[in-house]
Length: 252
Image (cartoon, rainbow, N blue to C red; front, side, top):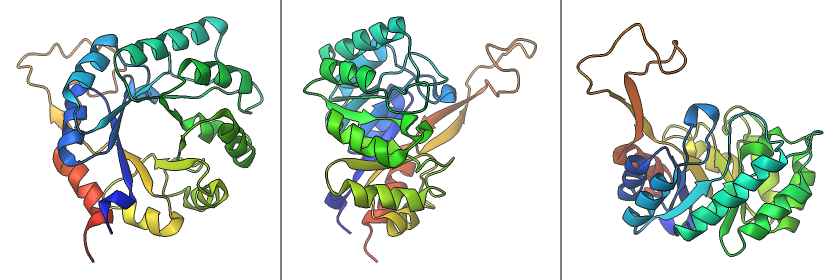
């Protein structure tokens, strides 16, 4: 299959991962901080440096002020608007966000407000979709709001488990919005996911563990969860990006 038939997006946790994604042939990155929380808005500096160094790969930025749910306060909405404006000024090609109501429905008012702020940029509704109460109603609402794509695992912990719903969403979308399959996508399952769903855009991290170069570390002190290995860092690698893409583009 030809690579041009697909679009590959890498969830990048920093500039280093952005560069590995670009070297590996990714079409787009979603730049995030706070990966253990499911992704939060990256810093001004992270966006600025990533934009300067990304030449062949498009830069999308997640706009999410915190982890947890997707029900936002007025002050959080204000910050999200400011972050969208900052991403625009720094040259981001797109932004990624999503707001829900208390009852699990799409918050039309909040999302419309952010869509207007991001006018002219590519718009992805993120995995808040996987927490919504009715995916088919949400699909139509997001089309009406003007989103370009929906990042979703098919409302399951991993995209491969959500393949039946992903296929239904892809068919119902009928070219009106893109279904971007993500969460747990890798070189072992991306081809099966495509065969089961027909989806042509994929989101994956392609990370590998790298041991810290610190020669001394106080074993009694933790910066966060003591059950987390803070001496191991996770970075996207060019090799894993290439390997994942190759599963859909190599000749049989």
